[in-house]
Image 1 (cartoon, rainbow, N blue to C red):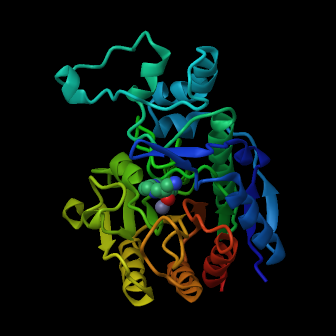
Image 2: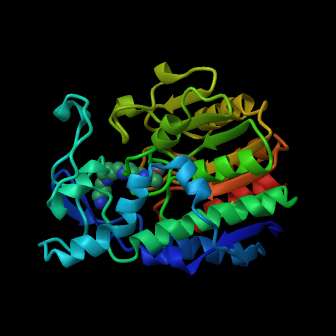
Image 3: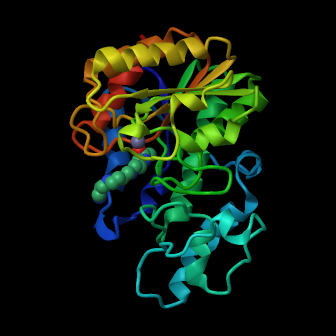
Length: 342
Ligand code: SP5
Ligand code: ZN
């Protein structure tokens, strides 16, 4: 039985991207509401205690993200849907790369359909009705888990959806809109004291989180992920060459299994020992059989990762990131938390 609290909001189900535009083609979305429903079902069956998310103000959110990004996400669907465009989701077609304007700030475009290009860095992360409400609810879920830990719970799980670790200060992408783990770490810094470590074991590099805290001593970031050099998202970063005192990337070969993955998780945990509190960005997409990654971790591997991170003995908020196999996502989260709470 799992005796830990998990935080939930029905509003996280309101985001229905339905599709991703990948290599110019509309393909079915993998980041679907059923993911969160499956996790909740497994947690309840395992005996975890559901706690309803409570509303939090924007202070931690705006300490992490550009107000212009937040305002865009808040208004994007309303503006798009009022403009009678041919797509039923907000999707960029032209990108405001800084080099385009010689490093000068880009103008705010008059055309509604050009606006996403100020804030989106890929075409896979669509916005529709309910996207903002779900992304903002996921922030409340994460912050409620922080409250539980600040109030003395050793461990709390935040059932966040949509995920967040690919979002930088001012750019969204990778099926993510607001960086829940980074916002949780910022709140923990305030409530529990630093340094705070974020250990990201999603199959993909936590590029947004890395960029947010780069060069800061108060939030340490470590990420275990499939080598972007082998052709995997986020492609442009996530290499070991980016490592410094505050940031540790542990890229793994395609096809890596439990032994290699757990050795990297162990190194990430070692990196976090000097922290005062921990955020685990838990993606279960590194599991064998997940459609979005070539890492082949077993359920026993996830349980062992939980044990390794739990052995740090730090106050911990676990934030949900990726994981796309609907039949295994719930059991894998339970395995990880079982290892952790042991
Ligand atoms: C949070 C998270 O795990 N984000 C992962 C985003 C990576 N997506 C890369 C998608 C690459 C192409 N996938 C094709 C799927 C077609 N539906
Ligand atoms: Zn992922």
